Amino acid sequence: MKKTLFLCSTVLALSLIATPALAASDVPENYRFHDEIDYLIGKKVITGYEDNTFRPDNVVTRAEAAIMIGKLKGLDGTQKATQFTDVSKSSKASGYIAAAQKAGYLNGYPDKTFRPDAKMTRGDMAIVLGNVFTTPLSTELNFKDVSSNMKAFESINKIVSYNIAVGYPDKTFRPLDAVTRGQFSAFLARGLEPVFKNDTHMENSYLRDKTKIYSYRLDDGTTLNSRYTEDSKLAATGESLGFLWENYTKDEDDIFYTENETDDMYAIGYPYSEYVVELVYPIQKGKVFNIDNPFAPKSKITGVNVTVKTGYKTFTNATEVTVPVDPSVKHDTGYKYYMVEGFGNVKTVALDGKVFYELIKIQ
Image (cartoon, rainbow, N blue to C red; front, side, top):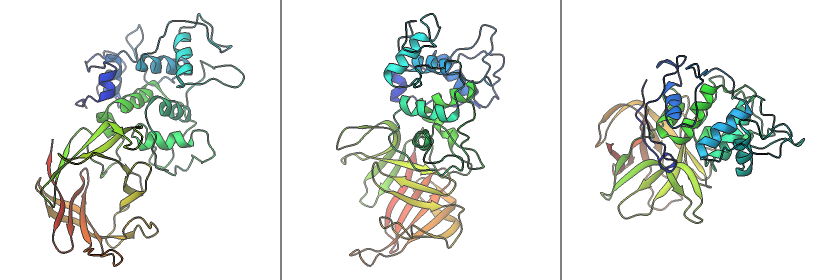
């Protein structure tokens, strides 16, 4: 299925202008990663072979990864001597290997080898992509086959949190599995373009479309807009935070936050602060959550398939969550909010009926 590209600042910075380019005989339009491969070939980040094939199921080697990353980041690929004993100047990839190593994207081994023909595993790729893309924030995702003592542990959590990679339905990541050219293309494309990040959302996800701008009406009549952007920065230090959601109004400072989802929950998180769980899965009426989080209100699912009217449209499949009055907070009235698949929170209403927050437009 063809995807409409939403050009982000990274792409513009790299002068990656979308053009159809793929004519590989072994990548039909119904191939899972056709659009991602097409996108990257059009940007000359990856190339096919002289026989008009792309060989998407071939395993990516470390040398091939260095070439692709080098082209993506605009590194000098001129063949040159390297510090690795197994990469000579005459090697096709020598320039990109040297440049990628200098930039900190790829490293060699303690024995001074690079092992250019070794396969890239999913764990290796997580580390590389964590170096290539800006991914400082993460949620611990608890894959059954990823332990905290693994070298790739933090990198895996980061690239999954940033919707660059995704685990498997059996709650594994399979870090030792080799990465194919098709899969690697998908990882790179997701690191660059929100439209491809959408493909990592699980079935019946509550995550919003990362290519759209959502507008909400607040209780004082102000319009709050929310968009997914790579231009996020930590206000205190100016640190780049990579792709995050941005809330902005006409008069207030921008606020950046993450929207994360696992098999167990949907949560909103603020940079270097706490995450607040907004839903727990599977959704069941009467379920109480945030019990052990002192920073979050105690929440209860009080309705499923609820009808809720917003300024944007009337939804008939909302999940209603009720947050009771907190007696320790003066004038607290408690509230209800309504979550919809593909839209997140569409409305928040005080228990006395006052509307705090309501979806009014998507563009």
